[in-house]
Image (tube, rainbow over all chains, first blue to last red; front, side, top):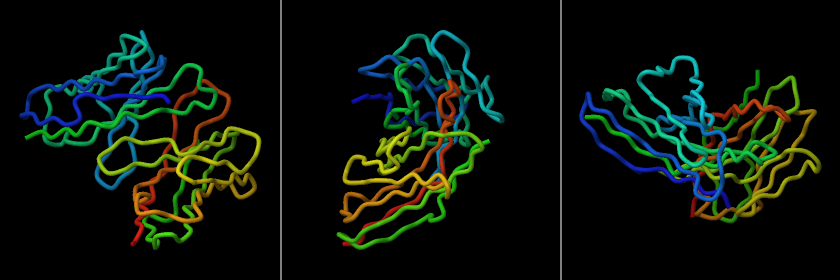
Length: 117
Length: 115
């Protein structure tokens, strides 16, 4: 089946530093990738949608200059949290949609736990 | 706009008992429907999906769901649960037959299987 990986699985960083999270589709080409944020005991909040080779579309209220998304290839998207602060601590999950997926179903990565101290 | 409601935030059930997790959606257009499962500290895994055709959809791990257009529901069922089914379950909806990619997730239902 379709597999999506994320790296790292967890990261601890100091306030003010930047962190990059990678999302890869391992056995399919993902024309569209999505980045979500999930708080404890809550549902997923879509942050942005990225299409290969074009700029990401951010959801309302998400700072595009703080959460930089790059989708440089059909198998890789990156999320960079710039100048991270403790309030950015969260579980970040990416998903990928295969271009042939008729139903638009998404395949999710295992998530990245970010802790900002 | 589309929305998803999962009325039960927590569902405790004894092992080997049946379970139903409820999902209702709101949409003025045709939709695709999904159920995802999330185990602790992991991403989401697709359980099953309804695109068209038969309203009874079978998925992985013995789960099934039935699409009811008149009641705008897509309830998830399993006849006999196992301890390993303890997880968070999310119902999701997407506008059908468009290139619009946004998937709307429900708030989730926490299933706890009691031994």
